[in-house]
Length: 323
Ligand code: NAP
Image 1 (cartoon, rainbow, N blue to C red):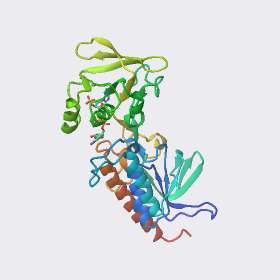
Image 2 (cartoon, rainbow, N blue to C red):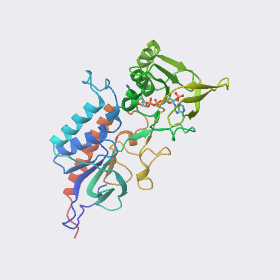
Image 3 (tube, protein in one colour):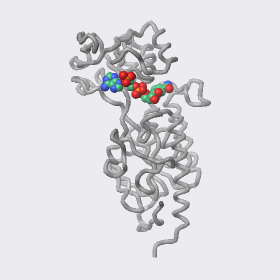
Image 4 (cartoon, helix red, strand yellow):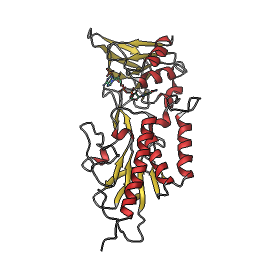
């Protein structure tokens, strides 16, 4: 249930809603809130547009079937929310205080206060956790083919993972690399059949089944990778200058730990109206979605969050001021 309409000193602006995160979920929530004439701030976070901004090509978002990059979609999302008056704040959240009726979102460069908050901070790439991965990060180890692929023109690279991301990124890397070997821990991909077919038909791509990476080596950049076949237990050293890791994501929910209820993997727990465990705080997108993780599902969740915020603030508005 909403709490009573909050009051604060006149000098401290209290916005209607602060949206945390600027990916498809957050931008959709911001669009609905701003179109409802709510004073809406969007804390951009570390990456404007979130994960979609580094997606090479989008072809599964209904109606957008012609060449459209994640960067272009991000530009359109920004223009769209700004057209209706949402304001982007280029900063990151360092802490939150959701204890009172006025929610406080602390940033590196100050703080924002609001009557409602939408948490849509998304997810980040999971790491392998093998020796050499961190030390060679940005020196051949990458989690984004779109960002780094062009540096590997004529190189031999490895892609780790067996899901849609690994397939898409492997296909993208064939534009630059001499060879792309997919290292997968099982003997079957979990990716969709169409992507699998394209991968298997591509002459530049090979697959190392039942194989895991043991270590990544090189100085100062990646030169070789030690792999192990999990069936035979044999190890092998592969010459490769790039290792692109696509083994899933984890929710960016650390800053909300102890504040909002979450599951054992850190995904925020929400009900069917996007409500978190704290009244006035809503969540949408990958930070609260261990399953679907699509642009379309995030946009849908964001729209719901935006509409629910409108209703929530409308209810607050109709409450009498505290005596
Ligand atoms: P994912 O579907 O969770 O796949 C992760 C892959 O990494 C799996 O093959 C998994 O192996 C492997 N893996 C996990 N942990 C590992 C470890 N420690 N060491 C080695 N391998 C490991 O992740 P995703 O590919 O990023 O996709 C996430 C979601 O986004 C999915 O729902 C996907 O459909 C969606 N997505 C869709 C598209 C599209 O539709 N075009 C594109 C990208 C992503 P196992 O198979 O053995 O578990």
